Length: 384
Ligand SMILES: Cc1cc2nc3c(=O)[nH]c(=O)nc-3n(C[C@H](O)[C@H](O)[C@H](O)COP(=O)(O)OP(=O)(O)OC[C@H]3O[C@@H](n4cnc5c(N)ncnc54)[C@H](O)[C@@H]3O)c2cc1C
Image 1 (cartoon, rainbow, N blue to C red):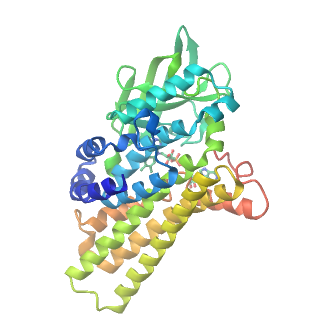
Image 2: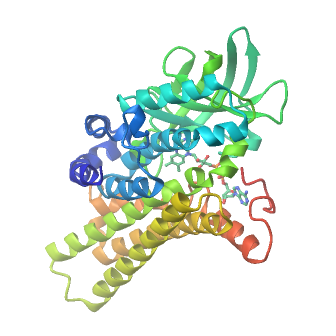
Image 3: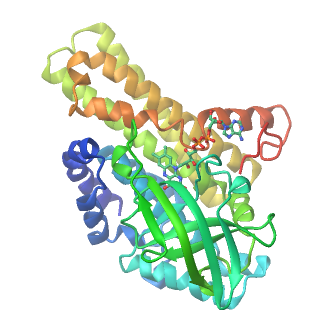
């Protein structure tokens, strides 16, 4: 699968400027991902997938992002849904008291992914961001299932996914936040609002939800699991984007090297030093991301693992923005023209530290922790 990702990256890179210019969903990249079997990356082998670990995912996301960060970011949403579902092992399900029907629904969703379906995430809302505890989208139990009503925003791949993970709050009990897998189609309306500075090709539009789903659409089969899962598996919500942004940073170094060589600027010490520093910074951030991923696989949930998860996101976001800005400066004004790879990479990299957990939030979590507190519960605002 890593070899597949490396094969696809140059194809993505060749198409990236057009998708970025038009703010269009990368249709051909997704056709490539489907054909290569990557939608089944996180799906266990017994259900027809590749059974990848979190470290495998991080390595692949990095490679895909070297081609097109926006494509890798949309893919990240699908990997998060399938990875989190696959992470609900039978042992964990038993510990959480999940019903057997929920495990069948989990297996059906994962098998479908291995067969070529892909999932988007409709969690964030205007005003609440992705903070689960602040969501206003509401659901209520109705005959045979649930009715969900609300408005989502920043939904990468909206209008193209086969189904959406929708987070909502119980109308009957405000403390319960649950997640549903809602099939595309009736009851979901995309409002094309995404015209952003960076990651333009993610098509992260608004999604209006007024839908009734069968009981099996409730993930886990038990209400109120969303916050529990976020705290049990912070790597998907905090660190999975990290590999994407390190890949974007590496692409910026590669694009600068190509530009500098073409323009015969490599003899200038200031330019060489910028490239040298950028190379070292990206390599260090990459190591941090892979260390976090290794620990997630080997010692999930441990305090030191979680520290690495937050460190990885902080280092990736900050490094991407700093490196892309420095590479643009090394390359000069001609690289600022629309259509130059560095112009796009600069804007895409800028999104890294803004995407939750933002760099400021990661730094606050790590600071609270370093001072002996609980990073999850002692923030100045709720983390989730
Ligand atoms: C390219 C891109 C693609 C995305 N794709 C998706 C997607 O597919 N699905 C989806 O659901 N969402 C997606 N998101 C949305 C994302 O997950 C966030 O919900 C969104 O960026 C939050 O934006 P916000 O404006 O509410 O800012 P916030 O995250 O609320 O941040 C506003 C400010 O408050 C600060 N802040 C926030 N929380 C705290 C805290 N606890 N403590 C201290 N300071 C805090 C931040 O650092 C920042 O300065 C995407 C975002 C981007 C950039």
